[in-house]
Image 1: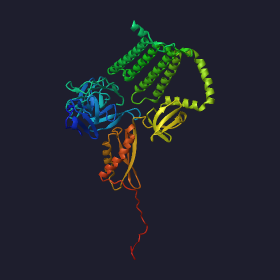
Image 2: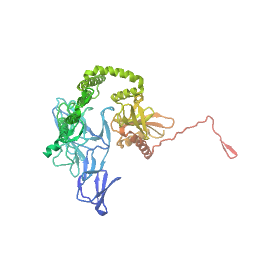
Image 3: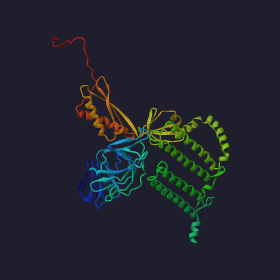
Image 4: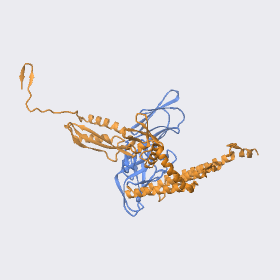
Length: 213
Length: 358
């Protein structure tokens, strides 16, 4: 599913969406997805279907609400996985010819009416094993304090983030949540697993302070 | 020799006092390039440092951006110094002094604004009104002191008293001769600091509505919803009620819809809730509200209150009613027409043909 595809007639199914490549005369290939139509001259490679951060209509954050809260003991570090929504980016060479949302799309306001931010919204369980979902996020929760801390949600800055992928699954970079006075989220830009491919070179993303809990 | 000749040959301002040589120009470009490069490097360094720092309020992307801008402006001033533009005299001082003073004031303004923001952010979820006032006092104090220092740096500090006196006299003269213009100008300044809106914001001002296209010294220009240009004098704008439709990230949309008395209101509420859940731009938090609002003359009136991203409010409004109507239709829930039951005190007699029946 993810990665480079040959330019020949075929369907590529990604959850609820279907991409259709149709060979036409003159060695051209027609790319079709819902109402989108792009003609691609045939040739060697360069057609890739890649995962992208779930920016949707143009948000910068992903808020994952935990279906079961986590109680973190003092000085403890817990790591686990969350399911996460993703977008899909289709590229011909370096040019993005299509970008779309797959699966459920939902947004929420993180913070106050007057100062918050709109974030992509998703509910997930925090599991020890990788969930069976298209998008996965590995999260390390660190509690450097001497108190127990409760984690109910993770708000991750994803604008400009790289993604990692295997053929069947997409991964966000490793996320570290530090439960200080104000919880701090670090989108490390590093792959959660060294065997995965990256969509592009990861750039540093400033840490995000979860001011509103 | 030929190279030295080219290096020293004048290419700009031949015959004038400026006389910029190729060498000077190259050096100026190098200064600017070095400043931009160093600024980028430092910005990158600060952003990297923000990931590990214990002082994220200070060491963050904004600080990196300020440092970058500082270097770019410094580079421009340095390059212009090299070319010799900055040595020109104006009103007893040099352009260089004035540029340096403007740059100094600009960065003090940026630092004061960021410091105010950090002061408010460090207070946690909701800063107290006292802290908000303290932050504003701090901000304006830094601005005033910076302005006075900038005047000194510009080399006109010694004339400050004369300037103020002249400004006072000028003010009186202008006050009589150009009252409207000055009023618009002052209102424009107040609007700038008050910041009820910015370019690109959709706004309603009294009866008018549209997108802010430009904010000028004397007037503000609005592109109305139907594509016409509206020029509003700043004085009028300042005295008007301004409704900024996208100042905050989310807006609430209120819709009322009636279902027939014979229908199960709870079922109707469930159908509407499911429809809202399926609409991406209806925010999950704050949670949508659907409830029986009124037992009306003709229908049980349900109220729907949902929050949407501000910039998507109109799109959600146009879609929501359509989808709710469709969902209720599919569930077989009737949205009634207005109707009235007439009751007669006496039994009616109906005449059929020539006969008469009760």
